[in-house]
Length: 431
Image (cartoon, rainbow, N blue to C red; front, side):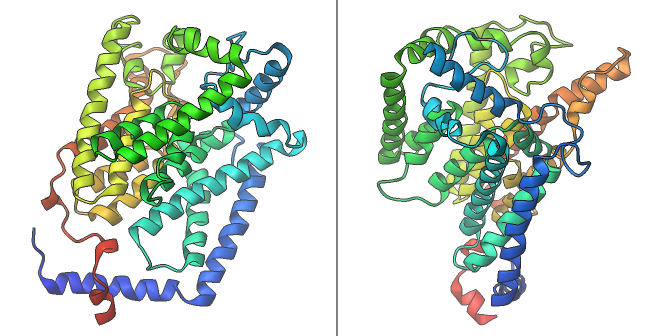
């Protein structure tokens, strides 16, 4: 669709005026200072779950982070972090031991506060990376930093998967920051290092290595593989018993999948395979091989859609599609895996709000603001409660699948206006 030059000019004029206001030195400073203050305040609020303002409705404050601390003490005592493999088991790859090891050095009374602050800063870093990509050289660094802090705090307060990420003490925002930096900002020989680090900590970011192979970006793929392999190899040298147990029993042996892929855990999982392990389907309806084939098919569709977006220079949207695929195609998917949700609201800046994909992304972001966990385990079992429980249990899966489908059918003509980041300097100078 070709828009008249006057329409484009009108948009760019408004865009330029808005940026000029935000880039005012004092306003940019106010945004940055207030954003930093909000990060500090929210870090404190996250650590006071008795306050009604944030986490009072949760009863598992920092359960995963405390579990990792227990795992590391277990490693010091027994030499094997994967035994016993029970509640709050260490399900990460061996390379993650190196990632979590520094928490042993943090003061115990301040560990959750420091982790919350680091996670918020990481989320702000991911948002800053995306905003800088969308608006290159348009916003002053102070303004970008402040806006990113504001969006991180608002996301932590109102987007439920992000809230869950913080209340559990999870790694989602930190890994998100690694991936967005590597995909959108870093170029040259260092590209691939952060994705390799993220893959060594949690396997699912490894899907981006496949993306680079499909794009024939060989250097980035090899760098990521080399980084992940090096960290895993170092962990194997330091803790050989743990590494051997992980690969022979937990990962390749299916121990983690067997523990999580049935029973009550499937009621809270948003993965494709979990959908067919609960009502109205039956546990065991799909064999492990059939589940793997289903996930692989969904991942393939997502990769094709992401590749098309990449060829349209929609790097951010392609990144979100791959993030979705890496999450819902995993054997088990908890709500906090969707910590990338704030990026959904930035996709219209790249695609234009008239794009069906952009609209679907915004609706999916709004779906993620609903606390579905309240409706997943109804006390009675009428047809109505069964229906809304099914919707609640599959809401995040269905919503994100809709984004993949919309991306698969996205056409260049669906973008009614040029991406603001790609407008010529002549447009701005003429305003």
